[in-house]
Amino acid sequence: MASDMLLNLVAEHGPWVLLVFYLLYRDLQKDQATRAVLDKNSSILIEITTIIRERLPSAGGRVG
Image 1 (cartoon, one colour):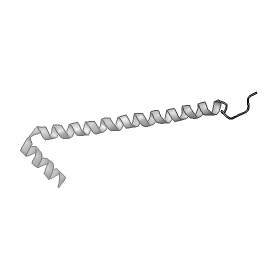
Image 2: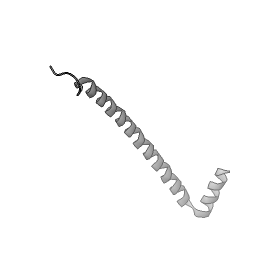
Image 3: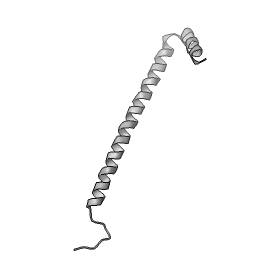
């Protein structure tokens, strides 16, 4: 069914339909790559924050 619809669109509107689908597909890939990088950066920042919190003295702790 989906292939019939795609073939009808290509037959009626020519290569523009393929170009639009290709560009949408590439945009999806770009969004997925961006999300993967942001997720990795977030996990690194969480690790750095955890390390800093472990090494700093607590604000309510005793001095000296």
